[in-house]
Structure formats: structure tokens, C-alpha cells
Image (cartoon, rainbow over the protein chains, first blue to last red):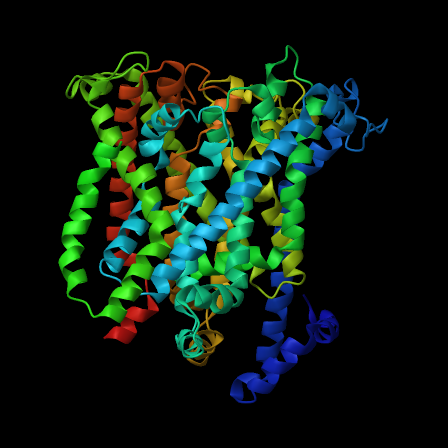
Length: 313
Length: 319
């Protein structure tokens, strides 16, 4: 970082540096101070980028290995040293997965369950959150406190009686246990999230609606819901991931193989005598694909959801 | 179930009925609509939460093996539990996991978020790269790591062999199985990282500028602005990750089935085995209540301690 490098760092310092020079016209704007600051910025870059890059490699290598393994033939998968680019290239593994397990059937089941559970969760949580955020009724605050408390209760506590209840109802080995609870406010966290969002919308909106003769439901449907698209998007995205990825509930409530969801169905590969790793990896890629696609399409909802939940309380 | 729920309903009605009667008509109308709006959740609360909690408490005091109706045995399940070596093993395994993977994950994700917050170029690209592993469904990531940890043909041991190290059996070795799962958990630091990053970006820049005018250097700014402003976010991540880590199930269920020699017998896995493999539902309910108690105590400790180290901006304003 000797003086010879200084001109270069001045040019690539860019607008940010110029701004801070302008802001610090006083005694601290001396050339000496500038030099040390430049040096620090350059040093930072020399440290930060390599560390970030190393971390990024650690994050990506397993995924690259997943993709690579999914495109190898069954023999090449065991070769040492590890072969990163499959040779020969075997995209046929993907159709082979559809033969090895009833993949299409499982995918359809998963779409069915996820869609209905997501829909129920969106409708019920937005209704309930509206009640808590915009209407006054005796016991509201106490009930909301109860709602918060239920978020903290581990699901294992209610698991066994719920299982017995579903057995009495004859719902075992049907999709009802995977769907119905979410139409009844299951996932209290989403109610909390939406309620916090609704609370920040001005009450004048409701009053204006009432003056125009809107019913309470009309205010919910035509004023609050359209204003809440970002928050509803967050709920939809995370609800989708929850249901798409769920392994535990299908494991407990489904027993017929044809009714399995993808998460459960992929586990069938382990049951065979020799694990067909190349097919298992191809199946894993396929089950992951919608989730990653969703992130690519709806990245802002992920970021917003994180801001709502973790940062603004 | 209905009998279990009805006292709760009765208390609610007794509590609010008098207040309800005294209301003017339009306020009563709003109240009725309020109850209608929260009705789905209220019904779900009674049927899927309150009822099952009461039933679960009762079941924990019974011997219930599904084929016969439950028989009341008092505290025998809990007595048995104290003398159950596997219960203590499960508690130990889960505790070790929580107390190692959570702090490691939180420190690592905080460090990465700090680096990304240093006016780095292509932040959204870096963010995506670090976040993608958390998007992979747990079943797929579990299968992938099962393959990576494969002692003979797995990527990890192949890479170690390239540098001349004879890798361990990983999941197949009593000493390495649990560390393997902890290692794997670090792959998903992207989730807390994203939350930290959002928090860091929310720190008002005028705080840093004020500190700079007072002559604060990098470390002073970090210690006196960044850390205090981030404590609520650290607190949030700590609570969420602690509770989630105590409930980890899929990874040990698929990768090790609790083995070898119970080295990865996680608490929820043991609970699942008792309930759905050995059909000891009463005993499993007792296990669930102990888990609840452990999580509750830990959460209370963290919440209580938060008064000492979590800084909320609102506190100052209120004074």
C-alpha cells in the first residue's frame, strides 16, 4: 500500500469518497488523514472480498456437488478424485427418477396440500389479524396475549392428542390434518405478523370507508386487503415454504404410499438395498427447484418478511 | 376433547358476558363482528391447542398404548423418566447441539452480515449466495449431506483424501456423528444473516456520524453503536434459533436414526420413537411436557437476561 498506489485508489474511490471529503472540509480533511482512510478502505477490500468469497464457496460447493451428482451415471458417482463436471453427461437421471418412484403423483399431492393449506392460512390469518388490529371487543388484548403464548408452545405438546383426535375423526391417512388446521388460524405467527402490519395503516382509511357506507367486511376486503399486499406476499411465500418442505406432519398422518408428499416420497430411495445416489440427488434437485425459483421471483417478499419479523417490533 | 375444552369456554364467557351486556348497541355490534373475525382462530385454538394441551397433560399421567384406553398411573411416567438412561442421553444430545450450533451460527452469521454491510459491491448477489442453502427443503439438504458425509465416496472425505487426510466415518462414528450434524447446521447461517443484515442497514447513519465527530474509531463505533443497536436483533435470533434447534428432528431421523449407539438420539426423535414406534403415548406425553418445561425455562432465562444486555430505543424515549 505504498504511495505509488494512491492515484489508483483515488480513481476507484468513486462517489462515496468524494462525498465524505466534501463533508469533512475542516481540519480532518488534511491529505494525511485522507491517505490513511484510503489505505484502510483498500485494506478492507483486500480482506473483506476474499473472506466473503471463501464463505460463498463453502456455501455453494454442496449445491454444485448436488447438481453434479444428479447428472452423473451410477458408476461415475463413486470416482476418486471427485469429478466436478459430469462426463458423460446424464440428464436421463431426471426422467429415471419419475420411473423409480411415483414422483409425478407425489408432486401432485404436494401441490394439492400446499395450495389448500396456503390458501387457508392466507384467508384465516388475514381475517383474524383484522379482528385483532381494527376492531374493539372485550377480551381482545387477553386473547392476543394467548395468541402470542401459543407461538411459544412447542408443537410436540399438542402432537399426541391432536393425533388421537384425527384418529377419532377418521382423518388419518387423509390430507385433512395437513390442511384443516391452517384454515383455523394454524400458524399463529402469521396472524401476529399481519396484525402488526395492519396496525400501521391509518385508521382514517376505515373511517372514510364507514362514511361511504362500507360494512366492516367491506373495509377488510376493499380497503385493508389491497393495502396489505406486501405483508400478504410475505405470508404466502413463507407459508408455501413451510408446507412444501414439511416432512414431520406427512410422516405422522399419511401411511399409504400413493398419498405421500414429495418430502416423504424422496425418503423412499433410502429404503432400497443400495442407495441410488445419482437418482436421489436428481430428486432432491427437483424438490428444491420450486423453492429457489420462488426466491428468484419474490425476493423482495423474503427481505420484507425479515424486516417485519426480526427488525421492526 | 369437548369436555376438556368446555371449562375454558365457560371461563371466557363468564369473564366477558357482563361487560358485553352493558355496551351501547353500536359498540356491541363492533364487538360481535370482532369475535366473528377471530372466530377461525378461536375455534382452532380450542380444538387444536387448548384441548390438546389439557389432554396431553392428562395423558402424561396415564399409561396409554393406543390399543387399550388410557389408565391413570399418577406420576409414574415422570418417575420412570428420571431413571431412563435414554431420556438423559436425549436431553444431553439436544443440549449439546443447541449450546454449540446456536452460538456458532449466530456469531458466524453476524460476522458475514457485518462484512456485507461494509459498502461491498453486489450485495444482493452475496446475500443470495449465502441465503440459497436455507431455501433447500430440509429433506433435500439432509439427503445431500448424507451423501457428502458418506465415509467412502462422500465429497468431504474425498477432499480430505486429496490433501492426504484419512477422514473419519462422520455419521457412522460415535464421536463424530453429533459434530457432523452441528457442522451441517452451519450451512444454513443465511437465515439469521439476512435478519442481521436488515438490522444493520436499519441503524441510522447519523449515529455513526455523531460518533465520528466525537473522534470514535472503527472499534469504538462497533462497540458503542453497532452492538447496542443490534442487541434486539441478536436477541430475536437467539430465541428463535434456540427454540428451533431444540426441536430438530428430520436430520437425525433420516441420517442416523439416533445412532450410532445413541450418539445422535435427539430429544424429539426419542419422543417420536416412543409415541409412534413403541406406541407409548402416555410416556411420550410426559416427554413432551418436560421438553416444554426446558424450553420455557430457557426462554424465561433469556428474556430475563435481556434486561441486562438488550437495548431498546423506546426505553430512552419513555423516560
